[in-house]
Every structure is written in C-alpha cells, then in structure tokens.
Length: 244
Image 1: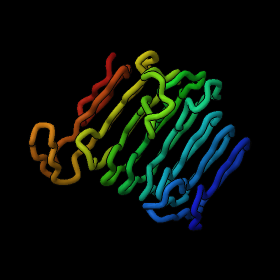
Image 2 (image 1 turned 30 degrees about the vertical axis):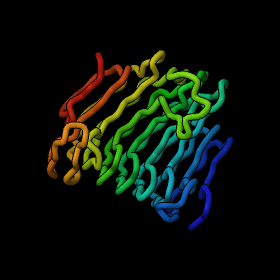
Image 3 (image 1 turned 90 degrees about the vertical axis):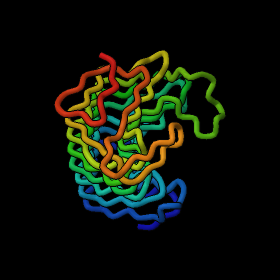
Image 4 (image 1 turned 45 degrees about the horizontal axis):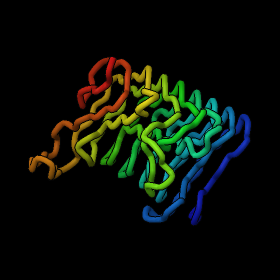
C-alpha cells in the first residue's frame, strides 16, 4: 500500500489478527501512520513491514491485550502509545507487548506520549522486549509534556498514570546523545518501570553544542529521567536514571 493517510485502523474490534502486510509511504509524508488501534481488545499484528512518514504503529485509548511481533519499522516515527490525554475522560491502555522487532532510521523507537493536561487515562502492564535499534533518534522515550503546537497545554501536569512498563533486551545505536528519555508527569510519576539489559552507543560523530564536546562513533549514550521510578537489572548502558 502507499496511502496518503493512515494505512490501517482498527477501532472497536475484538480478537483480530493482522499478519504479513507491507505498509509503505514516503518518509517525509505527514500523518501516514501504518497501523492504528484504539478501543480494541485482543489484536495481534505480526510479521508485517512498515515504512512511513509517521508512526509505524500507533496505540490509542482503550487498547487492551495487544501483541506486536516481528515488525521491521522504518523509516517513520516508531511505535507509539498515544498521544493520550486528548480528552478528559479517556480509556486506558493495558497489556501491550512488542517483541522481536527492528527499528531502522526512525525518529523514535518505543514511545509513550501524553498531553500535559488532566485525564482519567492510564498506561499499565506494557512490555517492550528483544528489540534492535539502528540509528534511531530517540530509542526509548516517555514524553508526558507532549504539546506539538504549544497550544492547549495548560500545565505541565499530565493526568495519565503510567505504571508497570518493562524495557528488556533492547540494544543498538542512537542518533542523539540521550538514548533514553523518561519525562513523566510532574504530579503523577511513572512507577514500577523496569530496565533490563539495555545497551546503546551513539551512531556517529555528534557535536554536542551545549559543552562543545565531540562524541566519536562508539561513544556510550546517556539517559535522562524526570519523575520516573523503578528498577534496573542486568547491564544498563546508558546508566539508568530511574529513582528507586
């Protein structure tokens, strides 16, 4: 397929399996999500290739028991939960697993994003595991200050509660210095986050203008956390920034 908008959307579906699709759009094409899911339960998306100008997979409110596996993603914006908190009264996202997948040249790897405003929404029981990132700008990111046009964001306090998110056996190269950015709500910290066996290096020569240092290929990346709490297990590179 080569659509000018979202390629496939499941809304209000139960027990659907989508296998072995190829979803392609130019990398500079806006709003060309590959596979979108919301208000759905028991969806499986496996063995499909997604190359777009937006999210390879976008997971919206009300998604439960969603399994993604064997996904080659890129170019595109990676796999996103959200954006959430568009509405005050919003269903949560829970029981999501992404495994055995490869991200190449994407803007993000695995992302959770919510607007910085009140919401009844939540994200819990999410597993990102056995992933390879090749030259990804933001391999692991939580952004609870999402406000793309700087409009409609009244505070820095997202009402979306994020908990029980596991990142396990994820490795590769980051296009930016910070391979892990976990920026959680000021009033609702992310809790029970688990990092296990995470390994990232910078991809190429990168001039970090803030302190005029040049990082050579193979230099370890860094991490940044705000109000993120959890546990680190195994080898973690960059060093974990989680609070206990």
